[in-house]
Length: 221
Image 1 (tube, rainbow, N blue to C red):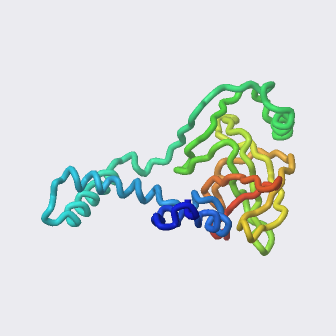
Image 2: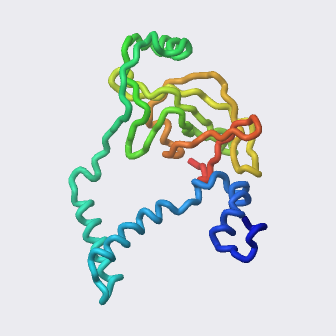
Image 3: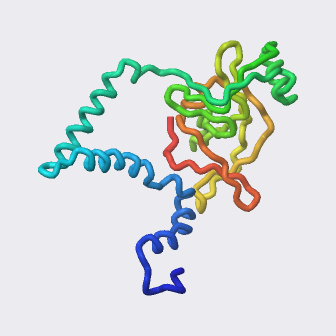
């Protein structure tokens, strides 16, 4: 479009033409999008239209927003931490893979039926199957130990994550991501161990046959 219509360049076209450089330097565009700002701004736009205030709209918007926050914070259930699951189903021990069955046997778990979910809100953090979390940091360089969530199962009335440990191959400065590979080693973790370092799920990106995990936050303990 830039080459065909050079006289009709608008800022949006210019931004699109630069996205590939931004993604190459900072990773996926979801890390620096502004949709959450737009969602917050939508509340003020609707309020400004409905209030029909033209004398001092900034004061009206600020006051109404403060009153709304006071109402939300005064709710007795606001600070309660609870677990909420989605896509809950029952799975039998025989339906699990051989590696998972062997893992349960090593941990002396003899249950035959489990509750499984696709995602769970645990301590205000969304944990989903097929997402990646950081279990711990090792060595002086504080290299992250990644785990890949295979299943979210209720074992002995406690929600646990069946994870696969990922091997860190190295750090790619061009992609600003850790190159990883699957080790095939499974483990059974409490959900708290997934939130100790970074209480946020990560994604795996495949580039030219290699798997990468992009971490923008500073990791330290």
